[in-house]
Image 1 (cartoon, rainbow, N blue to C red):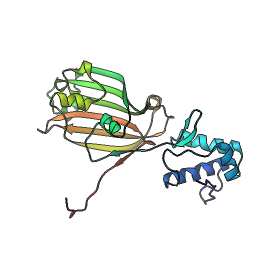
Image 2: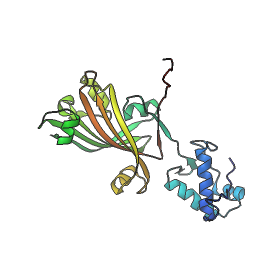
Image 3: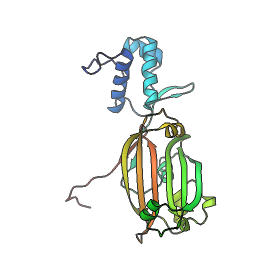
Image 4: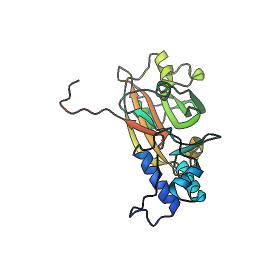
Length: 247
C-alpha cells in the first residue's frame, strides 16, 4: 500500500491533510487497502508521502471521525471492516452477527407493555386498545454499538417478555410466532445527538434508517421495527435476478 496525494481539480486547492485523507479514502473504497489491514505508522507515512507528521495525523483523525479507520491501543491504525448484511434474507441482528462469528450484546432502553397507538394498531392489524410490547435497545457486536432498534410486537406474541434475551426472533420462534416474510425500507440519514451518543459516533455521521414490517406464515403481522444502523459499518447486499433467470 503506497498512499500518495492526488491533485485532482476537485481537491488540489484543499489543505494537504484533506488531499491525503481523500486519497486514503479512495484507496479504501477501491479496495487497494483491505478491510482490517493496518496502515503504516505515522512516521512511515511521512516518509512515503513526504508530508509532515502533523499533516498525516490530521488526515488520519479525519478518517477516524468518518469511521473508515480505527485505532487499536498499542497496535496501530486499521481500516474499519464493513459488514455486508443480506438484504433479501429475513434474519435477526443476532443471527447475522453470530454467522460472522461475533459475540452479540444488548443494552436495553425500554421493555414495556403499552396500548398500541393508532399507527401501530393499523400496521400490526390490531383492534383499538390492544396491548403491544415496545422494545428499544442498542445492539452490540464485537464489543461495539452498531445499531439502535425500536420494535413493536403484539403483546400476546411475547408472553415471557420479562425474560427476553438478545434475540427477539428467537423468543418469537419459541412461541410459534417466527416471522417468515417481510418488507423493509432503507434510507440514508444523519445521526442526531441522541443517536450519535448511543452509537459512539460523531453527530451528523451518516446512518441507515431501516423500517421493517414482518409477518408469520398465516400472514398475521408480527413486528414493526424502526432501526438506525451505523452507515460507515454496514452495506446491505441483495441478490438480483433477470426475468428469465433459471432458479
